[in-house]
Structures are given as C-alpha cells and as structure tokens.
Length: 173
Image (cartoon, rainbow, N blue to C red; front, top):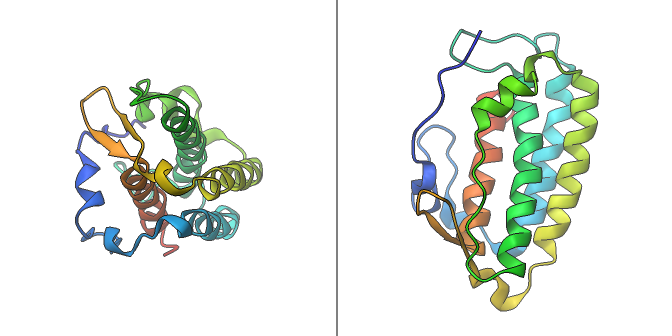
C-alpha cells in the first residue's frame, strides 16, 4: 500500500525544537555529529530484529523496515551532499524523491538483516565524513533545488533531525 508523500518543509528543524521527537537544534555541536550518527545506527539492529519490523502500524505509516531503508539511503545521500559542499562552491544538490525511491527499491520487501548491515556500513562512512570536517569547512554552503540553503553546520543539524526523528517514529528513542 502506498504512503502519501510527505511534502512538509522540515527546514525549520535547524532553528526550532521538534514537538514530535524532541530534537533540539541548539544541542547540536558540530564535533559531535559523527558520534550521534553512530549512536543512531546502534539502535537499528534491535529494531530490525523485532517480530513486527515488517508491519506497518497503519496505512499511512512506514514499517520499521521501511524507515530503516530510508535512513540507510539518507546516510548515503547526505554523505554525498556533504562531499559536494566540501569540494564545490555553493553546490546545488541533485533532487531526490524519497517516496519514489521507497517504491522503486521495494523497501517493504527487503531483508531486515541485510538492511541492518547496510545501514551500519553507511552510518560508519557518514560519521567518518562528518568527523573529518574541520574549522571553516563548517561554514561552507550548499542548496537544494527549492532554494533552501545550508551551511555544513545547518546541513548536519537538518540531517541529524531526520535520522533521529525516524528512530523516534519506530519507538527507539
């Protein structure tokens, strides 16, 4: 069953506390991004071992497996975008349709153990990439096609909210 695409603009999460998951952007320290990525990744193996990992709680919500697939792909995407921001001047990120990806990649049909392993690998590489950011690199910029502009610092905050919110979505945080 298809999920209605989320069309909300979540960029407010770089400035305001999320009332759903409690994420507070003021609590994000650039030097801790990698550690927070690793902590988030450590939650997913237990989630994916649940008997209900493949079950949607309702028709409008992904299953824990589908959320894990999304987080795995977000890790890869944001590592790629971080690389663009560090290598190019104010790059424009290529578009990514997360809902189309979920359908095309058949998130709900993937093997939870394989997803768990892949998510761990993507998290390790992405955490290492954020750990490697130094000094004035945190102020480098990039932007989405909708015009939203980020520094590496606000980009990291936006990214952390995404993955930490999804852990909350599945009852892990």
